[in-house]
Length: 233
Image (cartoon, rainbow, N blue to C red; front, side, top):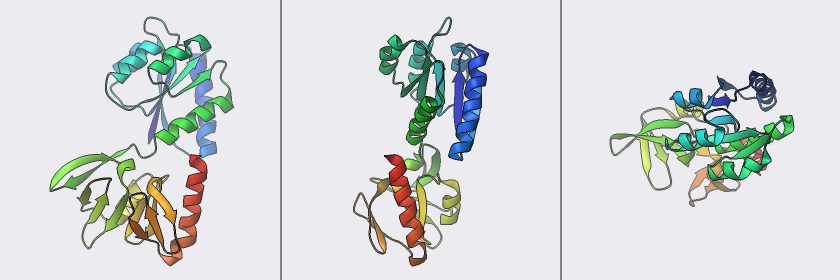
């Protein structure tokens, strides 16, 4: 579940953003957990990780720029969308890695565009535990190229390593981010981010691997890959 934090010192902004987030989730067929903070101190006191932070720049004591700097020092991945009525502070926000800006008063189209951009960068950032040479390893879903079913385990391919898991391919298909993973064959689950080309009966991945596509799934796979490519542009 994607976690979205709203940090602003005005309740009216929280109410407005929550209303727009409700419309956004409905229009994008998404479900998100929403968290409210009314000061930078409250946000920084929380030890939870939020995928997207809608952060007001002008707040008392600790402003949004200072809060973002402190968040970045934690070494975690955040998508920070700045909320502000002062365009002159955009340059400061760029320096601390804000991904987008939404000006106040908040425009629905502008907010939705910023959220679309943030969600795209959140694709597959959830982590899973797998094994490498017998040891447990934690990896991001988006770093998986494909998963191949063997008799009683699966092989998990990344850029330069092959991991293993005793979980079935079916379990992985249910757990992994369905926005980027697609079951192309009863033995193969593929990350669409790494598809280079689609041929008659197989996919070619960016590293040159060829993955068979079952005949009955061919039309579905082509459509999903096409839709994924269009939405990524």
